[in-house]
Structures are given as structure tokens and as C-alpha cells.
Image 1 (cartoon, rainbow, N blue to C red):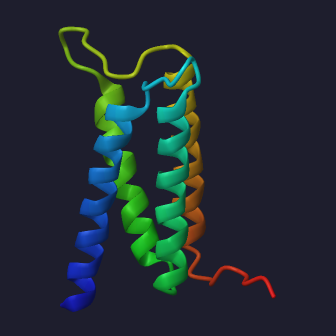
Image 2 (image 1 turned 90 degrees about the vertical axis):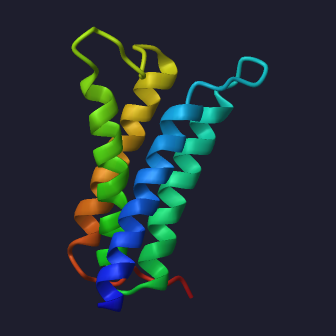
Image 3 (image 1 turned 180 degrees about the vertical axis):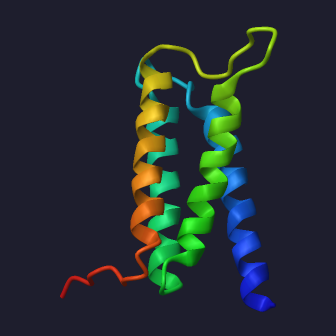
Length: 118
């Protein structure tokens, strides 16, 4: 039961980080896409940290799935033609981060522990 709650919690954490990623990916600081860099670092780091803290990778996979569900919902758009991710550097950068999250999801499902540097 506790493991199920942990998986649900990491799924919700992934959804929350996904919503925040969509919200800040377009922030620019003096022309530099700081929001996109922040989104990439935080999203991938949380997946990596979950993989290290909870061996087996299921919590990291759940987190990645929550992140990707939110992004998939946003990318699908609305019938009126509204969109939240534009076809520019920041939008394509967020899609690249999504591809990295897909790779993290797939590798987390293998169940092997990551190598620890010595």
C-alpha cells in the first residue's frame, strides 16, 4: 500500500513538474532561454534522483510518465486551435526534453541500478 502511494506521489510530482515546465519554458533572460534550461535541468535531475534514491526505477518511471502525460495533453491542443507550445526554439527545446524523458522512462523500466562512479 505504501509503495502504491509512493508511485502515485511520484506520478503527481511528474505532473506538477510538467505543468511548471510548460509554464516557464518560454522565459527569457536577456535573450537567453533561461526557462528552457531550467526546465531541462530540473526535469531530468528529478528523474535521475528518484532513480538513485529508490532502486528499481519504478518511481522514476512513474514520475516520467506523469511529466509526459501533461506534455502530451498540452501538445494535443484544443479544438479551437489554441496551443501552449509554439514552433520556435523554446517549443522545440521542450520537445527535445520530452524525448529525454521518454528515454529516462524506458531505461527506468529495465529495473537495473545506475552505475555509481567511484
